[in-house]
Length: 407
Image (cartoon, rainbow, N blue to C red; front, side, top):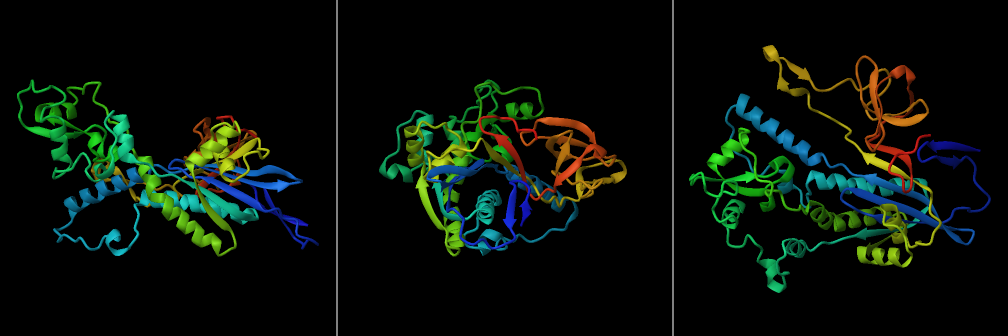
């Protein structure tokens, strides 16, 4: 009378039409975030509020680094083995498509959308409430640096007002003096140094410091180390992401789901915080999502689904390091090794885990979603395939427990 639609979360579908409608309307709360996305679905069953779905999605944070690596490879290849080409500037995506967003932000927005659409495919959702947040970056920066808070036209006159570029501003900020030797080297040639690599920290002024050329060369040669007080200041990358994505994500999901009769509303973080404190609830992503859904007193589930987005494709053909005799080793492994793929969910000695790396000999590295090692070299003969990788890894986890539960 029913068939299994999905194993995790376990979902069945009736093979017959019931005499009456037995579906309860489900309301979803979405606690959006840059790194984690908390979701909770609640309904009214037998005159009491109950939570029937809870998940926490871990977003990808490696896209910026992968794009930087690709840019390095392309520049090196063009300089090494191609003829001169005239510069082209009007062929960029952002100049051809209005509303273009960086791939790192676009991927996170798509991950939020995909999770909501997935929940709507297995539950009779009637209403979705999304929490969005906006951050005053200049006020946050002023509080962190113990400066006077901006007011009025101060927001139009940032710290770099009057400077040509970030380099000129950093030199002026540091008094045109080396921050390592404080001018003891007598070298008047000044360089702007990245505290963290440009690939990791970017070109923001809080990641730049002034060094004389003597100290700069000595540091990159490994002869000296920078003083311990030279550290990158706080990054507001996540706050910037939330400011960019909130309206884009809300408008997209509202346009998609309203056509299917699902109400989409917006709420704010201060409302969620007030609701959580008034009901004496613990601060977690799933709890916030339950407050957002409008059912803070619902009977919570003892578990939630821990989900993690992973990379689906790797189109790099060869390793970056060239071996002897000009041999370039292939970067891509076979898609299937003894019937298993990368990030497949498998059963090993009664424990559900994932294949994090494979060897052609048939011995795989098995781990949990949080990185806990199950076995560093388990034979494929001892594994049972549960689910193939579809870009989202899912594992059941107890609430209040940092480790994934074994089944």
